[in-house]
Figure 1 (tube, rainbow, N blue to C red):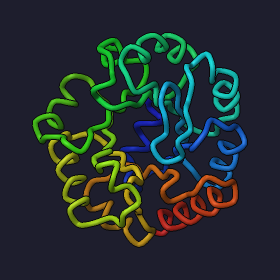
Figure 2 (figure 1 turned 90 degrees about the vertical axis):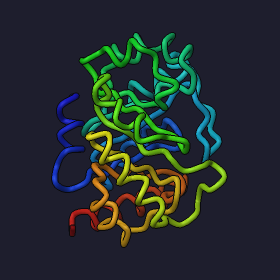
Figure 3 (figure 1 turned 45 degrees about the horizontal axis):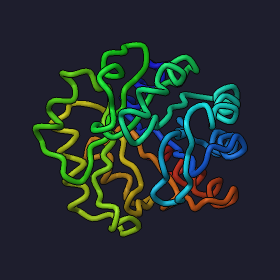
Length: 229
């Protein structure tokens, strides 16, 4: 489903990604039913907002395979927060059939960037440079996640400075840009995000909360707003 994922990111209308606060098949089902185009799960990492500790692929395997089995569209995975763990589990992750793998560029081992059978989403952090953004496409990155907000600022409202960062990444990378809700992105901000070259909005716990009801309501609201654009 590699092309399906990238096609959604390159479409005229931005895609909607739900980053699950925990690997829960029911939350994944709610996400699809409420209008998410893409779902993202995790292993080998602690979620910065929900504080959930995601185990190794083997520890998360049963629920991850259930989520994949029931997926209604592309499903990707954050493979980890350090290269050793990612490299250890990548073969199993690859065999499971995820549409894309995602992690900070500093955590992505070279074997992933050389694997053309799956989409590679590399995240840039708060100290990104335009030179780093320019290098991503030539070395084999398929899409860039603009995770450029400092953790201590999570939950603040979106600012014009944030938009400038997203625009800079889109301009210099030449790649589809995934914007995560590290800062609070509201439905009325979507037009501004679109002008920055955003290929996908990835919503998570900062704006969705962590309950079934709040996640369902948030996804449905963003789905309606995107469809009106």
